[in-house]
Amino acid sequence: MAEERQISEYGEFLKHLRIDKREMLKNMADKLGIKSSYLSAIESGNRDIPPALTELICSKYNLSDEECKKLHEAELNKDRKLVQIDMEKINSNRLAKEVVLNFAGKAANLSDEQLKEINAILNRK
Image 1 (cartoon, one colour):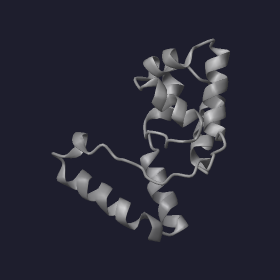
Image 2: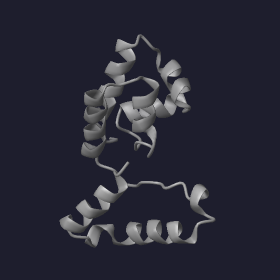
Image 3: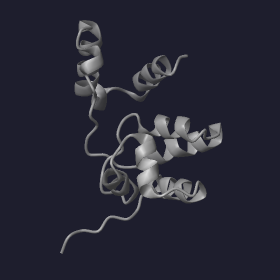
Image 4: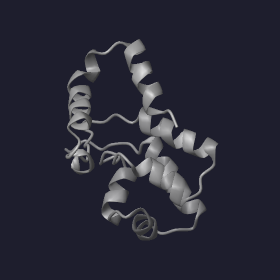
């Protein structure tokens, strides 16, 4: 018998947002530029969250800072098997590629302090 996944905190947030905005799954998916079947799979916890989806949701739905923070937390709480990085935008930048590939290969071995430093750099505006 196939293992049934429980809906994630992230999926719950999306479903409630859709209901609050009185949108059908297809309408939300169209607004986010993804297929409705993919959005449904994200809601049900059967697919990983694409890298830019959270920011896109915050933007398209004009979520408050508090709501965006809650959605980001839900994303962090979701277990992931894989994260894909779109390298197309940085293929011409050798240093950017090197940084991304180095980080991907070594992130698990970095100390909390090193990760905090990297996170602070990445979150600078």
